[in-house]
Amino acid sequence: MNLSQFNIGVSASGIQRSHPGCVRGLEDRAGAVQKSHVGCVALLLLMIISATILPLPTSAASVSSAYGQNAKKIVIPKHAASTLLPVVNQRDILEKHRILADRVLRALPSYCRDHLKNFYVNYEKNPANRGLGGESTMIITGNVPDREFMALVTHECGHVTDLGGLRGRDSAQPTPFADGTTPIYGDDPSMAFYSISWLSPRMMQPNMNDADFVSGYAKSDPFEDFSESFAFYALQKKEFKRLASKNAILKAKYDFMDQVVFGGTEIASSNYKRGKNVPWDVTKLPYVWHAKR
Ligand SMILES: [Zn+2]
Image (cartoon, rainbow, N blue to C red; front, side):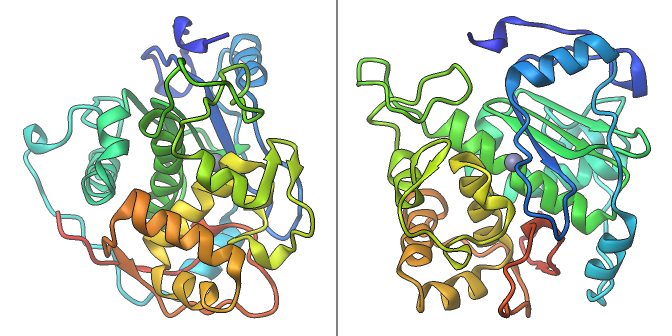
C-alpha cells in the first residue's frame, strides 16, 4: 500500500497541512539499544486515533550536554522569506526553523530538496519522536537546540534521499528490502548500501558487530543504517573516514556515501572521536556547520 494516497488533516499543535507519505521515526533512546522504527501503518493509525502528530517526549538533559561542547553559537542570517525554498517557507513554522531547514537542504546533495514535498515542524512539548522522514515528507520537533534541529533535518534528509531520491524501476525484480509495503527494486542504488550489513530489513548479515555501524540507532534496520550513515558523513566526515580506515564494513558505507551520494562534499566538521562505545544517535554528536547559504 502506498500511503501517499492518504491526506490527513491534523489539527493539533498548529499542524494543519496535509501530510501524505510514509515516514520513519527517530525516537529518543539515548543509551538504550532498542528498535525505534515507526512503520507507516503504525504511524498512520497513531495520527488517526490521536488526531495529533507525534505526542513526542524531548531529551533535554542529554541534548544540552552534547551540544554544550560546541562553543560557537549558530548565527541565523536574516533572509527575505521569498528567498527560502518553498517547501520550508510555511506560515506555521517559526522563521528561525525555516532558515535552518533551508540551510541544510541547500547544503546537502540535491536528492533531498528535489524530492521533499512536505515539511513540518512540531512544536508540541514532550515529543516521542524527534523526527520522522519518508520518501517525500519530514516532521521535525521544534523543541530542540538549533544545532540538533539541523542534525535532525540532516538525518531525515537521509530517508528522503534513500527512499525518494535513489529509486529502482518497477521493471526490475523486487528485493527482500521492502519499505513497509513499498517494494525496493533490484536496481535501486541503495541496495549496494543495504547489502553491506543486511540480508533483509529484519536480518543482518552474519558476523556484524556494533562497531560496524555508525551508531546504535543505525542497527534498527537498513533504512536507519542508511540515514545515520548519511548524517554521520554530513556532520562527522573526518571521523567516519578515520573509522573506515580500520573497519572494512564502515569503509564500504563511507565509500558509498562519498561516491554515490555526496561526491565528497564538505558540509560540517567536528573534533568528535569515537571511543570504545558506539554512540546511540548521530544527531546528538557535536559538530560545526561550514556550508554557507
Ligand atoms: Zn530515521
